[in-house]
Image 1 (cartoon, one colour):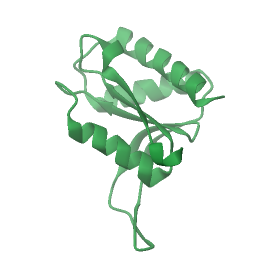
Image 2: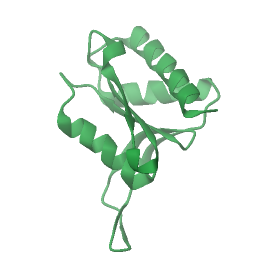
Image 3: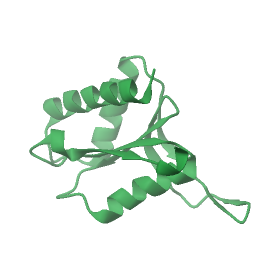
Length: 127
């Protein structure tokens, strides 16, 4: 399955979860329900994936976690905040770089318009 097809399927699951739950819940709720919805559709899903930092060839387990990793290729970073800020975009860019992944989706569930709250982020270093 291509990244575009996978991204399309993930977006469908995000819409389904949002329409069922609405805004205002904790990020952890959306994470668990979205992971369940993605697994139900037959996708390989891991949650809270440890993400070490490599510095001068030393692996440092400093507590970074990918919210959801789908098919070992797409990172989903879930937020439930008033609005997305620069730091949220920087966070997913860094996760893509550290994990050597190409595609990430940044999703803010605390919104009245989920369509405009799903941001597709590409790791241009992988191109």
